[in-house]
View (tube, rainbow, N blue to C red):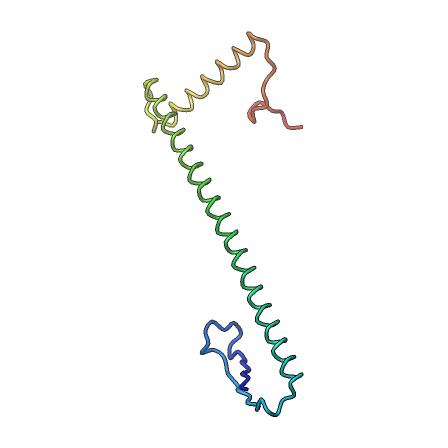
Length: 138
């Protein structure tokens, strides 16, 4: 029976070449059968433990990959929705006869919109909304 003991040469070994191997050779005839049974039992437990740890790690990595993929899909959808909204707003501005690149024109259009909304609220006696520009800081 040959047993091998491997000790890493570096802190985080990445391949088999980064280990130092020491072989220990013992004749099976010289080992008591009860000790052979115990050795096989312990070896089986070590292999099972290693396989279980690797399977759990693979499962966690798969879940992480799935979560990352879902998040990426959500980000793509959000980006597409944002692009569509920007395009529709530019179309509205162009329909109103304004240049979408003209910042002053856009600000005046937004100010006019705010004034129109304020006038409508006043007519309908609706309290001011919680818009960041209308909220008083206490």
